[in-house]
Amino acid sequence: MMLSKIRTRRRLMGAGLGTLMSSALLNIGCWGKPKKENNPWKCVYELNESRQLVAGSEKELASAIGRGADLRIRTEFKNNEHIDTSSNNPELIQEVAEFAGTYLVDQRWVAAIMTLRQPISLPDGFGSRPSMSFFLYNQNGQQAIARPFLDGQKPANKPGPSDVEDHGEMPKYHQLDSWDKGTNAPSSNFIYDFDLFRFLVRDDWQEVLSHDAEGKILSGSSETLGQNVADGKEVKIAVKNLCSDLDDNSNEVIPHEVFVKTGSCYYYTKQKVFIAGTHPLVRVKAAVPVQYKTQAWDFGWLMARTDGFVARLLLNPYTLKFERSEGYYSIRWFVR
Picture 1 (cartoon, rainbow, N blue to C red):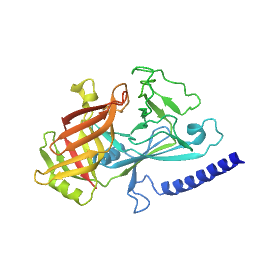
Picture 2: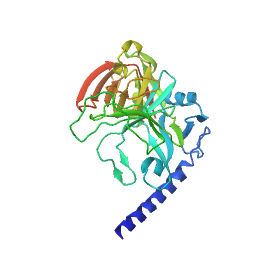
Picture 3: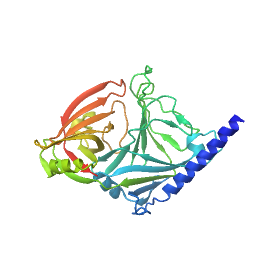
């Protein structure tokens, strides 16, 4: 009787969520404009299961991210192909995920990372080990996962290349490589053949200040930035070449910008200096496509100033120990 009630509850929950999600998601098209005037989200780029372009353009996506646009990606998959391969339930599941960390590489290539996600075990709760699920998606549909564990278990291996696992029960999952298995921070690059990849942007940020790494103003002013924030507006920054120290060959760093929102902001009204602390971010070596590899990524927080100074409080994913560093960077500042 108890099992029957649980199953009934799950069916009702699934039906309710499915109805709500379908109703909401069908209001978003990929034809240039949202179907509802009050919906700020617009699809600018869509791939099919074969990761072929079916709507929008790479240029439109890159241009939006370069303007500071927020990004969400909608994918679709069947329950018994992706969630529970032992199930006979082929129900279609629609996922829309927030990618709070966005990358614009070489002014033409977009990659994005889920920076706040804990592993979810659908439909009941969280994954078996507390960790961060730093899923990374490239504009061509290539994906990756880095998973720093947070439960304090002692690692069994040292960082390095790992064997690619057999995923025969999941034929749509194609693992490309594997890194650091048995450490506190395993990662891998892969492709899962989702039924679709729909890139949705909210493109309503306004750039109000741009300066070089020495703080020389290229456009806008810190005073305008301070006034906007005093009125309650949000702030996002784009930091140029933030991940250059993750590259083994610093002379061949691919130009890139990392976009991240800020939280607390401070404006020194006499000195005309603006300071902001960012939301958490993930740093990955810039490449086309962007990929996880051994000791080529970390995560943490930034404190940025409009004179170009950036303080970095970063976690080593293998040890979970904080490491402090600093540098000077070209930054663009956006408000909304």
